[in-house]
Length: 477
Ligand code: NAI
Image (tube, rainbow, N blue to C red):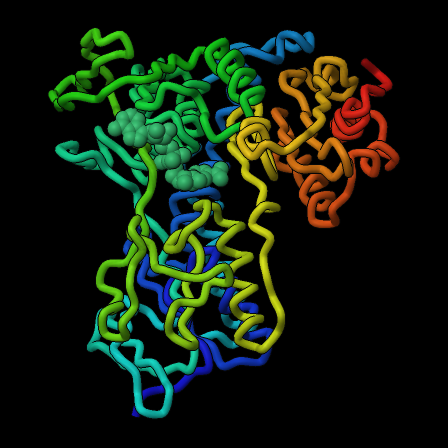
């Protein structure tokens, strides 16, 4: 007899494990299916984010920043250090230790919340007459069938590869291989100047690699506010990232010496870039293979994502899909919030997400973060807006830490003063953006932020000053 659950979640990345935890908190009998194996061959929870995404990349970003501080920035503080060296193996081992700690942490959460981990590949296998869905789990042993009233599909995404460019994760890498180099490559090529390309390109540049990023689009960071992309272009190229826009990638060849990438530049000239390693970071694709969607009559949208409504319901009652496998930004926190929302909907609560209030963060240095609309979007919508901007170059705390690149920009409605978007370039943008998210969730005006006391000296003062600048009354500029 198949084991019966109230909720089965397929996938234990940030979307899936959070959905499982919230459903368990609400009193449901929950199981979560996960098949991920780490490089040691052990089954691990956490999905891409914890194993080969957000968490390990942030560990390496921090290590490489420490190195760059020691080699390039300490001198300005009157501190001289000699003989600074990188032990890549130790750095990678530190990162792996953090990953293990985090993934084991989810095992603890599962035990604490009495969530059953079904180890293996989960697949929908039709429905019963009694309104249960069958979920088949095939692991090391024989496939085992479980049943649930509600199924949440949270199978995430995988790296998109280029046709005819084989990724071996040694010479030609996607995010997985690029987090596990055994030495600093002298010359590193990156295809795609998106989030992963810029973050991982920055890691290896700081550690000494000569990094060339090749991007197909003519505009740098096209999704960002134009003021942000302009500032970041200036800062990143000054730091030494070589970025070529508007290229067309040709043949990618491997040799004993490394990899050569043929490409045509924006003026139509052909080039051959020789590198020791190549990262391909041209986006990600939803994981929908082998899910048995047909067995229950679920379809994909035109872009290959599982079709859902604004609250992550599929067309089948009791079947939901969340995270990277559905429309919307591929951001861990977006998936987490969808997980909470769906668990609460199953419990009959009135949950919803304001997708306009989901913050975006790119962990370069300085970091980039934003929430709401960009100035280009507001122009395209014909919305009347006011804008206020304040640079960290005149913020005492930023000068003290030596991280004074960047600014805060606040966009507010011309008539109501409601905040419509906030854009930050700063060493602490990922944390500073939280204030803007709270403000927008509560429909605050720029005047509200301007009237709130902000600690001095702190980077957060720039948020207040940018809000005051909307009415042209910044105090320190
Ligand atoms: P992305 O969509 O951010 O960037 C891919 C870039 O590659 C784009 O600029 C695109 O124009 C370019 N591109 C596509 N095809 C190309 C080609 N043939 N030649 C040259 N350039 C080409 O995707 P990325 O960086 O791979 O990241 C994948 C996903 O993971 C993103 O959706 C992102 O949201 C998520 N992610 C989020 C992070 C964060 O929140 N900090 C960190 C890492 C990933």
